[in-house]
Length: 169
Image (cartoon, rainbow, N blue to C red):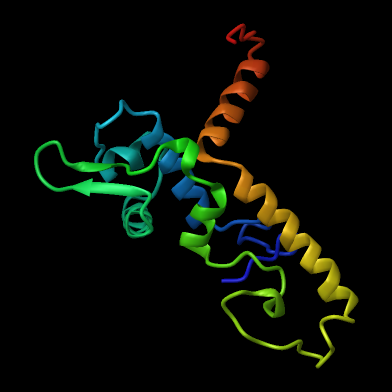
């Protein structure tokens, strides 16, 4: 799937860089990251925790397991847990596992080998050149931000909103 960072419209009319797939997967990963180390959590409990659709979530968790981010175990004490430390899981990796490429144009995709619809030379096409910059910027941010960053940023924003001062060093 090719993402249009500024043009992609979801069904409810909101602009979005990622689909619900990645949004739900990130929420599930946050929940799993906040569990005690080496503990597992059932997909149904993850779904209840953040009101995520259970069947859809199971598909996402399976994809994340196949992508090497989760481990799963069947039976007593089974469920899902992180296979990688949250500080080692880049947001880009999650997006790539679930969405594929994040190219704003098909001609910039690493997975779809196509030429410009208008037959333009991409090295002289202004649209291609600007969208190439957009892709590089998105990739740089997503590669350099981790699941741990996502959790910390959210916690900091909530604390700030509640006027809680964090004096930790």
